[in-house]
Image 1 (cartoon, helix red, strand yellow):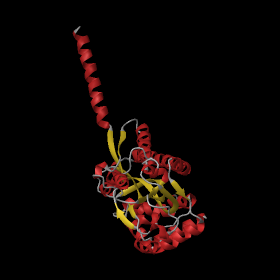
Image 2 (tube, helix red, strand yellow):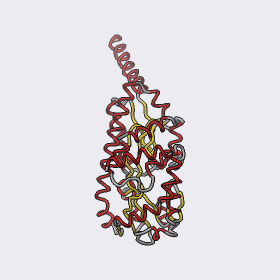
Image 3 (cartoon, one colour):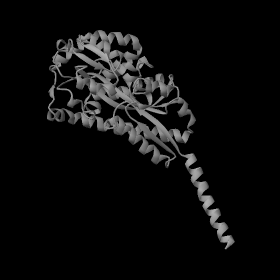
Image 4 (cartoon, one colour):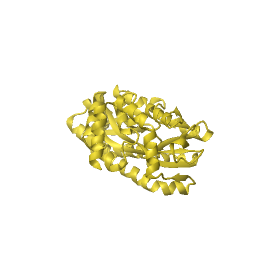
Length: 334
């Protein structure tokens, strides 16, 4: 009886020890992004957690924080926090990183791209590798590129068919480069956190904004507070999943391989659902009551000409050699 009792105690102790040590080996990492939990950004982040957790048998899981909550709603600050190791992972767009890494503005230069083939040639080619190297020098390891998309313009005042139609409009913008672009078009740009934008549009603090259809305008319900949309494709914005160098260096080689694979597959998935949503988006937005205008080639050229000064200004900031590598790759994809 005593032996039986001792055996039961020993068994329960072993189980308790296993539970303690098993939980001690598991780790939850934090990932921040700056859009809501209905977006393809968030779905990509959730997919990353799903894949990484499965690959590590639950030893590594990722807790996803939307709306830049870990940086107090400041979408630009997330990259800086990852850079110094205060955050493990970030999913953010290239334009949101420009305060820390000005070269990232190269992706979003006005009218650099005309189609997805050109985009994929840069993110998947030498320009993408170069940008990964530049980011690594700022202590952020880019694991994979995803998609925010071609940024389209919306407003509540009028249909935008020409640069003249932009004049005087109060436009919410995400970053410094877009301030110069809007100024070149005669608009009144106002830099604002995305978390504040919906209310600002609703209350008429700003007249309009610019963002991709599939990744932001539809899932963030911009159509509820905006009447007009023009598909001017004036700027492209990739997103990426990045990890702090400090955290990356703490992984052994086997773990790095699992993290890399999960990130790559998650961003492939995110890009696919973003493009699908964008493809179906025009009809959806019209059903929701938006007036959608699709410019002619001549009208797009007028926008391209009007934004050329902003292109030149930011090309100089980014670096002529880097811009040329992007332009050459774009030309080769035509």
